[in-house]
Every structure is written in structure tokens, then in C-alpha cells.
Image 1 (cartoon, rainbow, N blue to C red):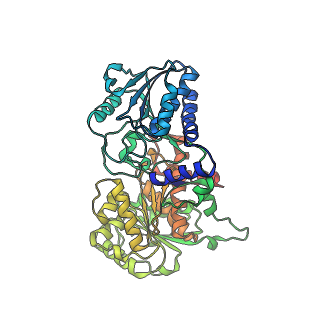
Image 2 (cartoon, rainbow, N blue to C red):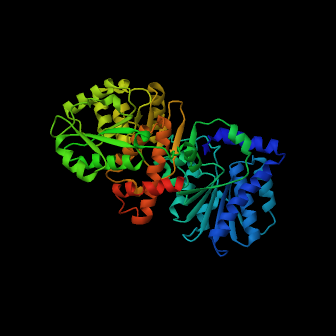
Image 3 (cartoon, rainbow, N blue to C red):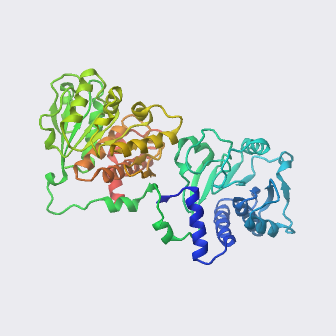
Length: 499
């Protein structure tokens, strides 16, 4: 799914109105009705509702909603947040339609007198995506008051005061919604942890914007969808053999951290790779062969850590490296030698990235390398970021500079491509915030890379599979007790869902 910034959304709105010969107020009515349908499906008619409506089009949506709720028999009050007499045309039309309808309408200046109670439902239609400055003064006081009421809050399209196009400040004065009902598309800001407490749960409603125009409209932001993944996934020939599906080398593990290597190896095999060799320190040979009998082992000359590059490194279809290898001096030298030794596709994670960061070796990363850092690992590579929005911008720049794919792990894992495009993953859950989850992802992506998926395909398919397997694991074990092994055990379920 495409994600657009606020300017592009306004252009799509305008095109839809012009091409389909509809009035803007008719589109507003469709938007308001979509929120109305949600409310009547989820709340009893006895629910008391207070609607805060601004003087722009977001306020117009709220006022149209007020009319629909009143007609349906809900007990409502409307609070007009009009800072002047200069209402948008459609807002003014919907405001006039409420007059003489026996609906209590109050100016926001008396909000403290309304005695808003916890059992009220608040509708936020004060500001939409057109807001371009922080909220201050009496309006800020009112929003703080609304948030303090502990009411359920439904935000129309976006919580008032929240930036729509990404993270610009970490603690804005904004409505803290329980539910955000977004029209047609999610907003870019929905995908950042800094704004979770403002957005609550977000859902999309289709308001009928022009499909052809959307399809042709350029954007740099997308979500990863099942349909996109189905186009990537390759079919297996009846005449396939294990060599058809590639030979992957995983260079993972050290004394005390062989579990990382084992998890990555198991996940790699579950990704569908034909052959797997694990390059491990001597101390891990026995446990690897017992835990993962399908994998071949190649032992390093060192007992406890990795110090060398495989003699036949160029014979492999992909190399995954970094899970649990540590950052000892001789391991750092191994990473340096690895980066200079082969053109085999790399998937680099964890300590491989830490070794690179310690020595500022980013420039040695071959083109089309995939790196999979969590936020702190990425900060070690490029410097600390003030927030996730800045971190994403740095990733976009680095991906372009080095022609690599960067997978920023976390909720809505971001896949950053060298062409500047960013894909947000929508599978996965908080239960996956557990030891070894990243090792599983590295194994999956390295296995896909060995199967001749290109760097972009392997990254998109890998993060989607990883998150989806985690979702299946959540259903079986719950978020609280989910462990990395559970993710591996459900990779097959994820594949079945896609197929």
C-alpha cells in the first residue's frame, strides 16, 4: 500500500473531486459517514458523545458526523473550536446544517464548565493534516484537559496537533486518541514509536479516492502487503533439487552465544534454502551438529570466537554474519577480511555491524549488502539520533550513498532501499521483542538471498515472513511468553498463509 504525505493527499482529494464531478462537501459526507458507521457498530445508542470541531475541513468532518449521530438518536454535544469567523466553506455549510436542530453547541472557551466525565466518548475533529505549527496557549490547555479526562477518544483522520508526515518533535501538544480513523491511507507518523500514545489503535476507512490516480501517483513510502509478497515469492519446479535453492554460509556464534548461531541456522533452513554451512568456533561444533543436524559445520581455527574467513567463501550463494560473534580484536580483523574477500551477497547483523562501527568501515560494504541493525546498532554506525524520524532520514541517506538495503528493526520494521523508498512492515507484534528474534531474521533473509532473491526481494519477503511467523506464534503462546524458537516453528505457517 502506498503512503502519501499531507500535500499528496490533498492533491488526490482534489483530483477525485474534479474527475468524478463531485462536490468537496460530498466527499466530506462520505468521510463523516465512515466514522459514523464505526461508532454505530461499536457503541450503544446510550453513549454520550462530545464532539470537538475546528474551523477547517477536519472540523467539517466532525460537524457532519454530529448531524448523522443526532439523526441516529445519540445524545451529543458539539464544541466549536473556531478561532475566527473564517471557516472553510464545507465546514461552514455543515455548521449551518446543525443550527436549529436542538443540538447543544458551545464555544470552546467554556470547555471547563462542561464537566466531561470518563464515560463520555470524545470525537476529535479540531485540526487535521493541514496544521503546520505547534499548538500553544488556550488551545494547548484545552487539549491537555481533554487528555486528562480518561475518556475514550476517536480522532478523525489524525489526532489534532500531531505531525502527519513523520516525527518532527517527540512530545507535541496533541490529542491522545484511543482510536484514530484515518481516511484511505495511514499517515507516515503512524509508524513511529514516539507517537504511539497519541494515535492509539489506527484503522483505515475507504472514502472512494480515485484508484487510477493513486496507482500512478509517486511516493517514497509504502507498507508491505500480502499481495506485494505474493508477487515476489518464487514457485518451485517439480524437477528442483537441493542445489536449486542455494547454499548459504552463516558465520555466527561464540563461546556463551552459540544459541544465536543455532537460532539463525534453524531459521535459515526454514526459509527454504537448499544447503547450509555454519562457520563456527570450535567450541560450538558439537552443539550445532546436535541442535541442527541438517546443517554442515566448518570450524574456525580458534576455540572460542571467529577469526578467519572460510577458505571457499566464493562458493556460497549468500553469507550471513554477525549473530553472537562478539567484537574481539581478531573478530574485528575477520570482519575486515570478509568485506574485502568476496562479492558473495552479504546479510550483516549485530556484532558484524558493531565491528564495522568500531572501525568506521561502512565504506567497505559491497553494493547490495543487507544490514539489519536495531536502533542502537544503527546509531553506532552513523551517530546518535534525536528520534526515529531523524534515524530514518540517516538510513535513507546511507542507503543511497552505499547502495545497500538497510532494515531498521522494531515495530513496523523499515526496509530502506537505495532508491530512497521506504517500506514499513505491518506484520509482527510486541512479543517478538525477545532475545534471538533478530538472529532468526538474519537467518531467514540470508536463506532467501541464497535462493537467488535479490537484496530488495529478500528483505521485503524476509521481514514479512518473520513478523507473520511471530503473529502465528502469538496466537499459540501469547505475546508475554513468546520466544525466538516459536517464531522459527511458525515460518511454515507464514508461508502457507502467503501461498
